[in-house]
Image (cartoon, rainbow, N blue to C red):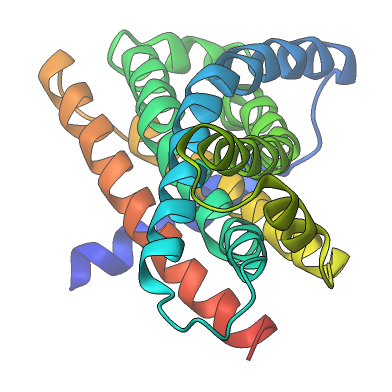
Length: 247
């Protein structure tokens, strides 16, 4: 228990250093663009592939479980749309990025720690925590909601394709269901959750990398811990936000 409280305290101390005034804004701007390209644009492919299959699977399963002949068929489109918006896209993207970018961030910063590059930055008077973490944090908080919106769109496309190819329901009914009583608030809610997940993924992965001790083996273990803790906290945050915002 003492170790947990010590880790929480060091985590918030690191956040304090991250959000302190940066030395040169121009350097942070260029680094943020690089991080967006690496962790944001570089993740579009995997998010799109996963989302199209998830959308198709939700469409087929919803059709399979709706046995009441009195229910209109367009209700399948409504269910797919709301499932992607309220739950699947934001949480799925968060978990995917936690595994892909979270481990990368923890490994990158961890190797800088064990090779004493972070110590060299601090000796030169540079705020190492802000220099290394803040661009990554800004990149993921900005781009994860974009990936979430992309996931929703591609997931709906996956449902459309399975209706077109697999003859689940008429395509016209599916499209009507997607458009039926759409609440823009649901999209804002999904993107807000994605931004929260971006903050958690970046800060937790950075914390485990920043405070790693030992050699390359410990860096690998810290990366694994970062992914596991990030995934657990994403699911906990999902539960808390759903209960607070949608209750």
